Image (cartoon, rainbow, N blue to C red):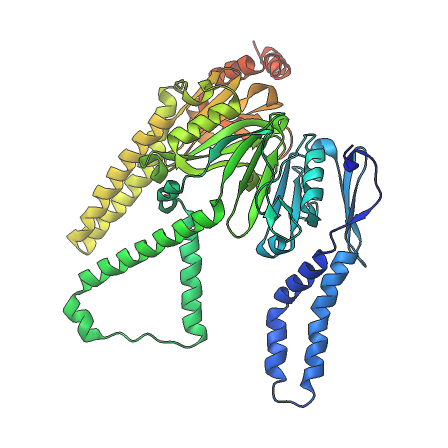
Length: 508
């Protein structure tokens, strides 16, 4: 019998964390320690004080280990930490949605992992997080299987593998798992088409310029050479250099994050994924909590016939959405294949959409062309006041407005296929979502002032816990009510009865 199947007392983390916590505390206090060393350099007797300051973070790290414990009862998992301000985080086992097992390089060197339990309920300060930072691989594997009510007898390389007598990683067989998707390194071609490269490059460039200011470095510019090359050529060269940096950083970030990506399905239907180069991460999703999928189709990926896939997990908080990633940016054919396997049928993925109607199409055109017209008028005024060169602004604004309106109209639609509510909308960041109708616990009809003027409303299907929902935008109100009633018969009846009664009371 699994030792977690019986009630145990409070357990401590693995003793090897006595090496990890002090090192982490030293990293947190690196800047103050460096300032102390620099301030007391050259003064007599400074060595003792420096050792004292060095002992403080080490002591805090040891104290963190001694004051952290956990236990698993018949129906709850509890984590206790803190000395002066003691805090106990507890949650029922039936609220566990996901279990993440991560291993940083120092964790992997010592053979321990960090286990994060996703319950769908966390405060803004993260005080409700259930984190066990420092479990042996075997203990984490058993605890993960117990929390998700699965039989998990396999490990993974690096983050979830046993070690032999020589300390080498020894992976176990995967006989009870079916491999659904394995990363193909050729997919790195999609990396520059995501926002990750822009974010990483922005951070890198910011650090570069901050370093120039900190160390008072002033690059020299030869104005004569610039004049010989020409300003136009210099600008083009700069843009190409920035584009190259963005591409390289995006590819590196993609590889570091998704190296070794593998999605598998366990015998009981649960989903398990593993990825990461330096810090390995494993995520297990309970099959009963996976209510649907969301296919992300940003414009850049869509032009390259790519997409990405995430699971709609019942009760998973918005801050935990990274845990629900099923497929990183990859070819659309692979994304559709995995989505069909998760849903159990390709119908919700490939079924044709039902148009939302001409009023919804007109609203797409209005929302895109009105801002474009404002920019066009501003460009025309600028061309009249300063230079005819500004005439290019109205042309570009109107052209982009037309293209955006057309693309939004083509991407708008909904469907009810094989027990799944399907909604698609957007252009620059198009998304197709499929939600199992049994997971819907409520319907919201929301309409802005502008939508009410044209007789449209948004139909929002909500799920249990968290902030997960699927929104079908710009539907006629009667169409929205019929769609909700067909998807979940009886759920809207109380609302319709109240609405009918109010109409009768105010009638002639």
